[in-house]
Image 1 (tube, rainbow, N blue to C red):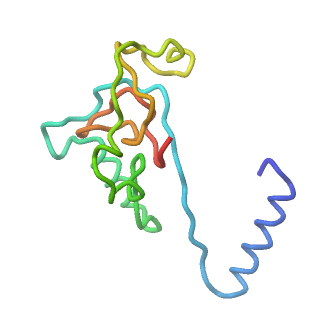
Image 2: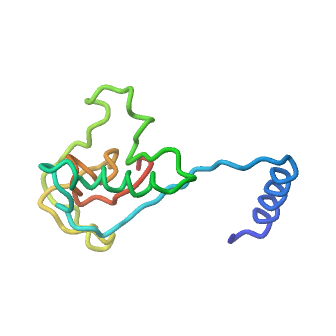
Length: 129
């Protein structure tokens, strides 16, 4: 870990869990920048990228849940509060952020970079931006 104080604290916590004879849970967030829009499929259920990522991660024995974008935190909200609005005009900073320069942009990425089983040009991620 980058901070030695945090590292020491985490080691003490892990030792405590070990002494209690149990295991520790956790959450891992991931982000993939620079992917092109259009990977996956909206037509074939077995080629949808969100489904394939979910299956690959859920095959790891310790994994008990997978979410893309806002996932569970947004599940109970109406669509008007969740959908990523599309605006005309590309984001000029996109090329410097590792994104493709598209003729449109989104100010949010609650969908986690995946829409309809395909990448939309935004970073593929877990957890809302």
